[in-house]
Image (tube, rainbow, N blue to C red):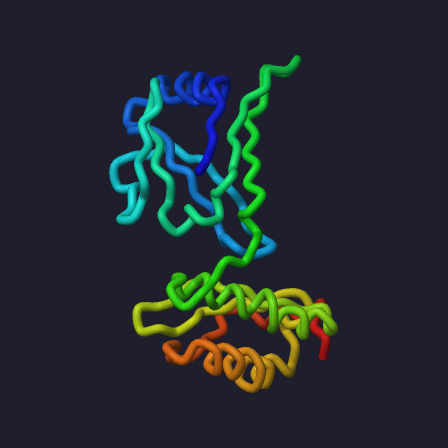
Length: 191
């Protein structure tokens, strides 16, 4: 679980005291298990808390940990160090970028695992990449292409013959994929 040092607790409590509507803090990871994983701490307000969040009471405030992020927050450390400029809050989550997926993992995590470990290495030879934007209620993966794939004339073939085929083979519960990339910018296009 996450360790929040005493100095970090004092600092966060001081920040929370200046907020009228904050219930505490919420800790989560954007794009967990991917190279782009980013650990975040935000004010927790009404409407911010989600089903599956785990609440933990500290002496001066409460913290909620995003349920989906919990496996990636293992061994995480939140610390605050004073310096000449005032101080700095740091978050170290050594497992945030490690892919931890199995058949029980959320579909988003499983899609990201396939994209970052199988699809993107192939696209990298053309200077391209693809990332997951969201999964729709009807189980379509909405993707965004970047680098050499943005504006490339072969993107339809890459999307249908490569990315979608790979994802559907490994994740048959998906209905398909959709591209939301603006391909009118052809400045970095491979073809």
